[in-house]
Image (cartoon, one colour):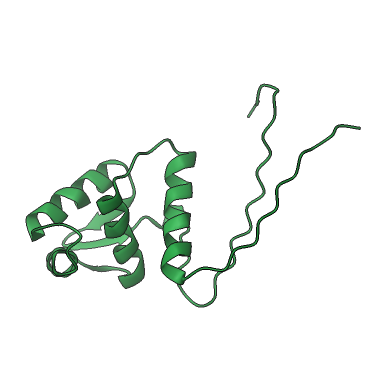
Length: 121
């Protein structure tokens, strides 16, 4: 019988932290790098849901995530290229394939096995 070293952690945190954790985990598993500002921008987009790009750029700029609406727009374009955001006409939404939960009480239950053996898909 193989020995498995198990680490179990139970943490209670604010909803924004749980949403960020989901985004960070998705990016980690897909080898995507994010700056803190990019992460904050995606957090706010996940919270507001589908929205007009111009309105969101102004909103994120007012939150001081980036200095100007144009900087927010640039970050959105960068996230779109990484397939983190879907743009439809003048509306944007966090990519539903990320399966980021934002409503109600959220419990994240990840089970990850790290092995010394080669992983085969």
